[in-house]
Amino acid sequence: MPGLPICLVGCGRWGALILRDLKSLGCEVSVVVQAEDSQQNARSLGADRVVASIKEIEVVSGFVIATPTATHRHVVESLLDRNVPIFVEKPITSDYESAARIADLAGDRVFVMDKWRYHSGILKLAEIAKSELLGPVKGLKTTRTQHGQPHMDVDSVWILLPHDLSIALEIFGYVPAAVHAVGSGTSKGLTELFSICGTSPWLVSEVSTRHSASRREVWLYCRDGVAYLDDSYSEEITISRGSTDTSIEKMPFSQEMPLLAELKAFINHIEGGPSPKSSAKEGAEVVRRIEQLRSIAMANF
Image (cartoon, rainbow, N blue to C red; front, side, top):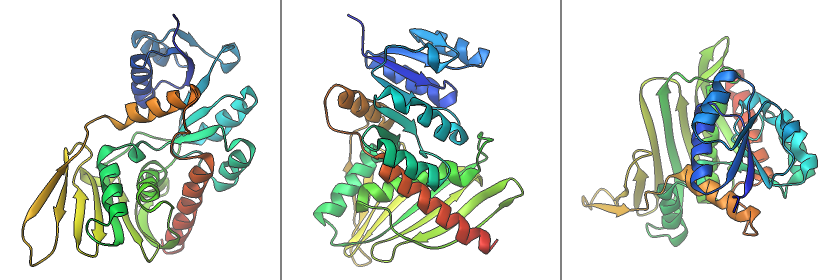
């Protein structure tokens, strides 16, 4: 029996991982990609069909978009008349006007692939926050640094900051308002941004592609202690309750990969289940916050 027909648009470095996981979930995957090396890559990874144009795709239950950020608006808008669910890589677009338009036109069918909202460590932090295990939440601090980034269509902030704003969305339930930001970069765009959102609770974020080491850290500050995830591949949350209590607690969590988890949620939705996390409206709000923070930073650049 054929699997659920899914169309993957784009099959680069990240798209290849999406294809792998869609196939592992039993989907029948058609891949739309134009570059010859990407077509060969898709075939080698088990794509059921590889075509150069979306127009060649007739029967499909849902689309997954893994094209460069600058193309998201055009690709999503070109698929809206198909009237099937669309899962687009973050950010939904790179400008708030188009993101809000998509949310207005198809907010019930377009969802954003915010993989960190499916990371078991982030879900554990959200659980700690909701239960007030360490008392009321005061704030969140995130660090996301690396050396360089391969994307040529947008700068580092558009690639990295959506992750941290989506983490705030998962833990707080909303994206806090922009307060302040400073950054640095080159004539091609920002390479790092230090930002503050909200006041109670607050979000302090650092994103940079000028660091020699890759760091992915999330710190949840509460009245009675701190819980933190020290790496994306960590197996546990570390809890420190305060200066007078020197004990350290460890809280393990599931090791399911977040990409697989979010694709499961999308497939389940197509088959009649609940909507995936990160609606088009929420995705648009993330884009608006990035635009606001960038504007503040550029004014001080």
